Image (cartoon, rainbow, N blue to C red):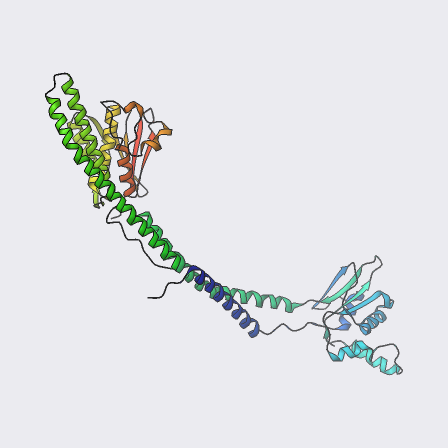
Length: 447
């Protein structure tokens, strides 16, 4: 098992390896591919192009610019061009594009200059040699002044520069191609533990059988995983303590409530019926609170559940009690979940609809891998600004605080918690025409 390293070390190592690899590829490509040759020109062709007697030879270009070329002067070339073009020497400029070699530098120093030579025949031979067709010299720029003050310039087309650009682009492309697998491997090594940690955190609840938090990857990711695992353990312990406390309170309250009920049954009417009903409601509320607390921490017993059949059973039970509950479903809908928890959640939604509206209409729809179970009624509904509050435990609307409809305020909270623990959600919407539509959304199991 490899020793975990910090993110800083991994990112720094990736950056260093990328830099070294990119430089190595660049040096290899540039060194393997020969450098482009220095461009050359034929003086006679350049002078002919400026004279206009013939179009520029291949490799030459003509342009017009506002200023004379700058660079190292070429006196002998300027003198030759002025003589051939029949222009004053001041109107002709010649400069090297790069510093020439020693032989041509001697010419530049004046040893082969046209002026000041004693031997006229030697001058003629020099002119003929310099103007000979095919004589190649390093690239230069030759310019002649125009009447409008601009300069007409002839220079070489540097084809080697385009070749050099292609070399550099090739080096960059090869470097990127070689670096891409390394970068992908490093990015996956950094992000995969984080993704697994995020997935485990999303599935985490207070159940005793919650999947363990993965502790892997870089040092910082391992520290985060341990911190989340420790926090989950602390929350689990606190939830167990709360459940134990509620169980103890419920147990302690049962005895005095039983005594009160025995005394109430001996009281004269009509107080006896009211007292017995109040005590029975208190016992029911205590049982509901205890069941809610235990359900929050109890692990889900997942198995394939046919929600259409489950809803049909709940509707049949309600109809047997004289309640108006109608079901609209067209096909079986299988989810992977805890049948007891789902039954309790749907029973709460149906009971709420019957309690506040006298009837419930249930519709089941499956779409895009999600199952929607709508429990709709024609009751007073729930204001939009109160829905977020009413899905919290022990929350009720004011008009529900009566002997007939009052409860512990756990029905919607149980349904929402059950949906979330199954990877779904509880949505509350207004029903068209009035009333409430409570929608339980669950993921459909893939066979």
